[in-house]
Structure formats: structure tokens, C-alpha cells
Image (cartoon, rainbow, N blue to C red; front, side, top):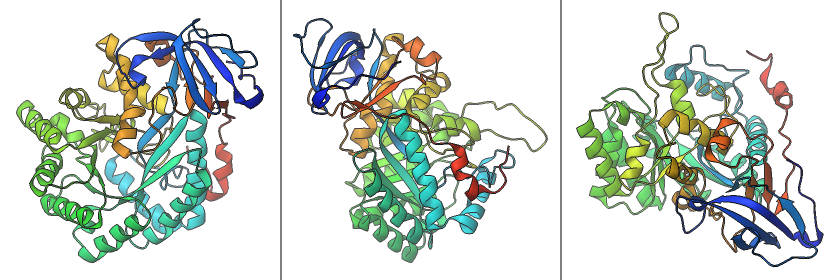
Length: 442
């Protein structure tokens, strides 16, 4: 796709763009062929193709039926872990090996300079793919919270106007049961405008840990964003406990539960009852399909073994129950996930295949809201993630004209507009990080 020509004042018209109704404030399931006028960095008009009056002096770009999307929002990432794979790979691909590898790398290498360079690299990748907002979890067990949170603050300032950044203080379940440590970290998150997080799966004191997180978040006026049930064990029932705790305490902040993998291995009755409680509690769910597919049901102790399930939570059932469901990248080139590039389209494409989001066919595009407007609402980002008159002209133009064309290819030739102007989509070279990594690993 050719780069859009510039015009004085940034005035332009996108002609014959295919706009999914699902990506507009009105919603819906159809595809509309439209013309879009852009003025002063915002969408000035949207109308059926060929019906807008002539606009002399505006740059014209013929989309030729190509799809237009709003810029992406990535609700669950780990920018502080990103791109450490070359120096600390996962030896067997398992969850516990990932946990141990990251812990060792953090203790050995996570200086402010190291975290800053890797974060900035990751943000340049996300920006080039068309992302406008990101929430990142920050490993916050002391003393790392005193290193990484100031770096995140610096990144927020550096990237202001390009990517809106949010932070979540990530703690292990044992940390949540340490009142002094939890108080320090919650205070750090509050001072930085962040959220309180934690990771709770199979843990014999899960109810206590969840109660501690909810109490601390309420006392500090923080929203909660927890890693929940990232496990294939039916003993992992933290999502149900979280829903019960939120309802019983009347917690008034926003609550996001990420992963929730084990919900898919429980019996139908338990799963249905848990989903009902999640909906009642107003908990939003963020599924991380690529990372969950990579880690869950990986048992290679006796040689290569094919996984028996896909690792993802019950996204279709949750959404059908009225739960807000987002899709996100999670980890990027670190021991928890060896691949990824913070590309919202890749997340949507892989989720469609992994979780069967493509049927009913006329509703498939509604899942694109899971990487745009749904995480905007859940995360309360300023970018609304919709194509609408008056909204910033932060959008992505694809050559693909339909769902199947969009899903079939990576759309590497997409055009990303920010404030109506095309950005440079050149991705950073991995070689930039070589001096942080030592000898590259396979």
C-alpha cells in the first residue's frame, strides 16, 4: 500500500474504505463502504462512499475497499520482561521454568538502564503496528519496584501523545500476604497513578491472598488487575474466589482478571456458576491466547509431547454472559512467550484461530472490539478505540477487504495514521539490543 500523500493542514479524504459497524459507537454486524474526511487530526465526516461533497485541496487516498480499524489497545503486557529471551531462554517451555528464568534474569540484569532500553524497544514495535494505548504489569517485589516504576514514569512522558501507558504492580501470592511489603508496593502504585496486581493460581492460601489484594486496593483507592488461574489444574479456582470476594466486600474499583485458563478444564456446572458470579461482580476478563497456548499443557519431561488443550479461557461463554472480554499480547520474546511483537492484529488473528471466534461469521468483526473499544472502556483510556466523527484520526488502513482476507495474511503493508497522518512503520532492529544480551540464543 502506498504512503498517503500529504496536503496542507493535514486535510485528507479516505475514499471507499470498508468500515465494520462493530468498530463504531453504534455497533452492529455489517460492513459499510464509506468515505472518511479528516481535518485537524480528527475525523470530520463519515458517509456512504461517493456521497460527501467535493473537498478541493484535501489529499485523497483511495482505500479501494480496504478495511479501516481504530488504533489498537493492548490491555495486558509485560514491557519490563520483554526481549530477554536471547540472554535467558526458557529451557523447556514450561511455566515454572519461565518463572525461574525471569526471576534469575531480574536479579542479575534489571537495572534502570536495561529496563528502559527494552521497554522503549517494545513500545516502538507496538507503535509501528498501530497501537495507541498499553497497560503493562510491572514486577514489583522490592527492591525492583524502586527501579522499574520510575522507568515506567519516564516512558510515559517520552511516549505521551503516541502511546498512552498504564502500569500495574505485579506481586506473587506470598507477597500479597506480607502486609508491610503490600503496603509499600500499593503506595508506589498509587503515587504513580497505577493499579494493584498479583498472580494467584494453585495456592493453598488463595482466599487470603485475594482478600488482602482487594482490601489494599480499596484502602488505597486503586483498581485491581490480577493474574488468575494461569494453570491447567482443577484445584485452581481463584476466579470464583475473586468474584465472591468482590461481591461480599462491595469493592467499588474496577477489577480485571487475566488468563483464567483453568476455567476451561472445570466441569460445565462449575464453569457456568463461576461465569455467572463473574458477571454479577462486574469483573472484566482479559485473555492472552498466544502465551496461554504456548505455556499451558506443556509436559515434555519424557521427550516431546503434543498438548491436549489450547490453554485459553472460555471467552465465548464469558462474553455471552455479558462479561467484558478483551484480548491482549501478554509477554514478548521472554521465557513466558518466545515470540510476539505487540501487534494487536496478530493477537486478534491468533485468537480467532485458537478460540473459534470466526463464527457466527456475521459477528466475527465484533471480536475486533476486544483489541480496541472494550479494553478502552475497561482500562479507562482516553483513546476510545472507535471510528467516530470527532474522534482522533488514529486508525489503521488495510488492503484486506473482508474477515477472511484480514485473517489470512499478517497485513504487513498496513498504513497507520496518527492524528490523520501516516507514521513511519519501520520496526526497530533486534541488533539494537545485542549489547544487553551477550551471545544470541536460538
